[in-house]
Length: 470
Image (cartoon, rainbow, N blue to C red; front, side, top):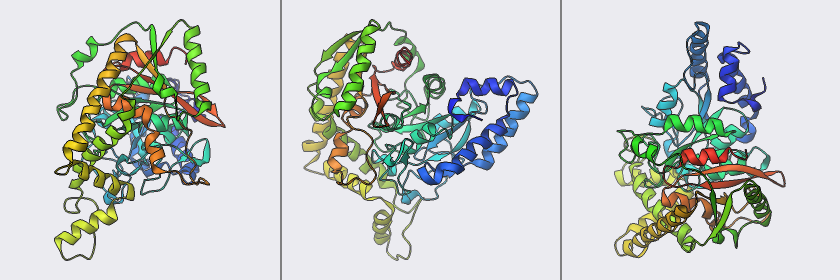
């Protein structure tokens, strides 16, 4: 069975034509996982027994001639920071090692209700704190195109699980680029929906005002099918948006494309710039008008993102104290020691660093100086981006200014360099708009992606546009 060419529609047609059974399909995916997982470190836990039991139910359904639901028998993976009843939900962190959730995240529940089969949970940077999976307490996920490079992060395992054909699609979580950047590094499609379009219920929070759940897949048709299933109002998440508002903002004609001058200046790898320019030329040849804009607030983006995200993670992660769930420091007799040692040994270095930064930014005497100013910068970024999107249908940017990082570089990468590399993805996150990574080529056999940025709730339009030039 050639897993590489499969998509949701092809799988369903094969089921109906009796080319193979759902059980055969699931077994083939697990054979692939067993073959490569030790090399690439994609999965933190697997769901083989339950998956095969569900596959048998689908086979019986097909044998009876019953109509298939949208995702009946389709195997998918879920990022470790999203809660599922099946498999552990550890958020890439030792502090949640072995944790089993008591419910499914709303997005996962919607997929299961349509017949999708959970294959396993994928590796990620601890609590989403990183862009390489180097910060996972369960090891680094390696790039599908090079074992010497990272798969990206924080949804690196999710992206690699799709690129290496161990599932049909994956569900990731994006705070400042954690779907789009690994999708770019792994050469697949990855959608960050508008903030509020997909319920966050069941996502282990990093930055509550930024977190979004979205799909990753090898093709746009699967992205579209999955997105339409997981989106919508959820009474368990007050930030979700009513469907009526979504419908009112769709079905617009695409004519104009914007590019941001600040994104194409300093810091962008010239080889990535060449691929991006060639893609722009393709669009111009096909009748699209390209307009150049300035986004002066770009210089504030990374700083404001990290101040806001770290402040929110400082608050969100205070619940992990060893009392209610997760890891608890052993051999302690005092409550204060239990709190301190649980956090010391349970949290990764990067997570502790972000908690400290966020706590400092929110502390008395500094909240106005740092956090409040970051929120003001966010408002400015949002307004400037919205002003540009009033004049064009989309904004196109490279997804990342750099190629996938080497796992063991000759010269150690400065952490600030990795933070600054988030520049193109944090801006849509701060503005709450939708954006999508699409593969556009390779540099030195490593994938390169382009980001399509649309307005709030413009997912359908973005997805249709992404299909125009394939």
